[in-house]
Amino acid sequence: MTVEQIFEKTKQTFPYLGKGTVYRNLNLLADEGIIRRLQIPGRPIRFDSNTVPHQHMVCVSCGNIVDIADLDPAEMHRLAGPQTEIVDQTLVIYVVCDECAI
Image (tube, rainbow, N blue to C red):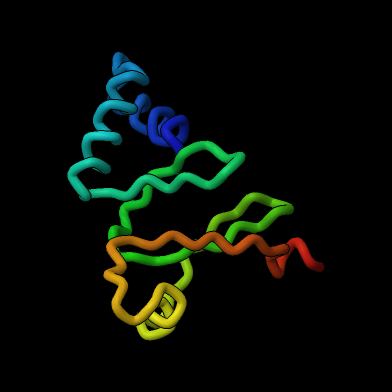
């Protein structure tokens, strides 16, 4: 979800909540590793509750973002080099989703 989506949903329960409070707390949670920041170029920052390393697929037509399974660790090491320590990974695959392709 984007900050705006989270703010609008939370504001229903806490009408006096400020957007700055939402930003600060989401960034704090991301810095602590409780949630992940998802930065896709040209799109608002999203926050992901799935902290397990995984990749994303983005539809260039409708903008829908879908989690995809983590890449095979052996393939990642082949790409990075066998002695390289991989500390994090991000991959975004841009597609036209099945619904938009119809």
